[in-house]
Length: 186
Image (cartoon, rainbow, N blue to C red; front, side, top):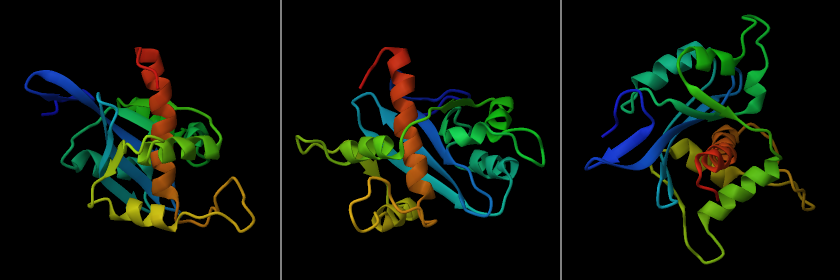
C-alpha cells in the first residue's frame, strides 16, 4: 500500500520498494512517463506507462497524478529538461520541483545508460533484474524497435520511436546516483 506523499511502498509495515517516475520530455515528439518499482532485492519492475504528444508538462502531470498510483514524488528525467522553455521561461524540471516532485537528473552517455538497462535485462549470471508489465505496450514496442545503424555504431538510431526507452535509461542512470547517496551502491 502506498502512503500519500511518499515514494516507498509498504508490505505488512515494512518498506520493500520505492516507486519512481521516469520521464522523457516532449511536445511534438511524445512525452513518455514510466512508473517503476525499485525493490530492495535489486529487481526493477516497470508497472505502467503514459506516452502522449502535444500537451504541456502541466497537462501531463495532471494525467499522471490521476493514475491509480497517485502522486509519486521521485522522478528521474532527461537533464535537458533543466533548460528554460522559451514560452514560459521555466524549465520542466523547475515546474516539477515547484509541484513537489524530487527530480533527479544526471548527465551520462547514451551507451552508459543503455548498458545499465542491458545488465538489468540479463546479467552475466543469467539472472534477470528488469521486468516489464504487459500493460507497458509502448515501452515493449519501443524496445523491440530499438536499433543501431549498420556498421556497428555505439549510439542507437534516434528515429522517434525511442522515448519510452530513453525514460527507462534515465531511471537507471539516476537510480544509481540516488542509491549511492543513500548508502546502497550498485
